[in-house]
Amino acid sequence: MPAHTNSTWGGRFSAGPAEAVAAYTDSQHYDRALWEQDIRASKAHARMLGRQGVLTADEAARIIEGLDAVGEEIRAGTFTWQPALEDVHMNIEARLTELIGDAGKKLHTGRSRNDQVALTFRLFVADALEGWRKGLVALCEALVRRAAEHRQDILPGYTHLQPAQPVSLAQHLLAYAWMFRRDAGRLGDTLKRVRVSPLGAAALAGTTYPLDPQAVADEVGFAGILANSMDAVSDRDFVLEALFDAATIMMHLSRLCEEIVLWANPAFGFVRLPDAFSTGSSIMPQKKNPDVAELMRGKTGRVYGALMGLLTVMKGLPLAYNRDMQEDKEGFLDANATVSASLSIMAAMLGELVFRTERMREACTAGFLNATELADYLVAQGVPFREAHHVTGQAVAAAERENKGLEDLTLPELQALSPRIGDDVYRVLQCAAAVERRETPGGTGPRSVGRQLEALRRWLETVSIQADT
Ligand code: ARG
Image (spheres, rainbow, N blue to C red):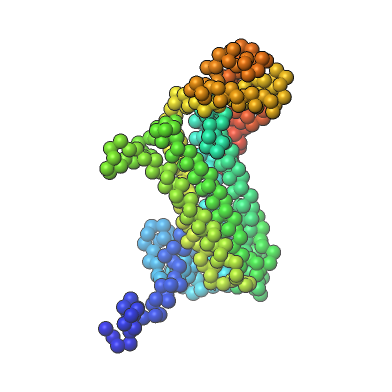
């Protein structure tokens, strides 16, 4: 062991502190994921510099050609990434200069890595949000399709995870479709704030070159430019907002996963998992585990983590750019991979879930799901609701004693509790009737569900058209 190395901790520092520091600050091994957006942003910048006379037309053209060539190398996997060059931006610029010579060194005129990384990341986040939006649309399509198949099928609806009132399976599935539709809307709102260009801010104070930042914004498809250069290079609220959207999508997915885990449990027995989305146990041959749903529920944690992580990174930073902000990327990259994969896997899994509708229907006969129906029936006969509630409670107790359902009580038994009960009560006590009669807007009744399906299909048509154009 060399005499100068610390014997307690020096073993791993054989390379010397300089190399360890370089590895510590290096980000190219992950921010290379942003190469396509960096090249797009640089091309827009170069073109603008050419138009403004900061570069000659020939220089701008050579830079743009060179950037395309670098992009081809990266795409083809022949590009050599150099850790010593720190990040994706420096790697691309260095190779550009290698390829086209001195003109390459002029690309950075009127620009700093601070506004460059902000624009590149805004482009990347915008692309990611578009991807999630497509994933949400596909998931809603799957939910609408499955809901339309099961308009007639009923299952217990729960509150406190206790049987409450019967609902249609369509209503239950559409509840999630509406959540994911709101998530898609949230992404659209976020995109308005992501698609604003920081270029022209340079390091933090603006620049002396006669730039045309709006032209760069136009070229990359952004609506406008940020109004303050210090804000432009130093805020990451666009990432935070995107991560909040991601966290909410995962939270919704995770709840749906939890339903699938519960429903696949034999005590419920409401779904059969497709083989492709479940696994067996290495020791218990009878098991079929909902691993995919569990894992998706679990992965929600790391997306929340990315949001909390970046909020914490940002909270103490003075203006303007600080290197801390390089920590904005890994969490987002991970969240992006998690959200994208989770959305498409959930859509595929939903498409193949086998709903055991006979088990669902059977489950409606236990747990006095029709108790509210009896109370409402009494109210219709002129009994005040509180009293109706009390009488119904007595009926439930009586049925429970005899280990049967409310619908199994005889008419004399019921009339002993309230003389207003007639034999038309039995029609009301059917679970299917309970579903059919709930036609308030948004209710589980068939007409209400039909209206929801129609509204969601109309929305799906408009978003598919937007996605095509
Ligand atoms: N890789 C850096 C980041 O992600 C780029 C900006 C570095 N700027 C600087 N002045 N060191 O934030």
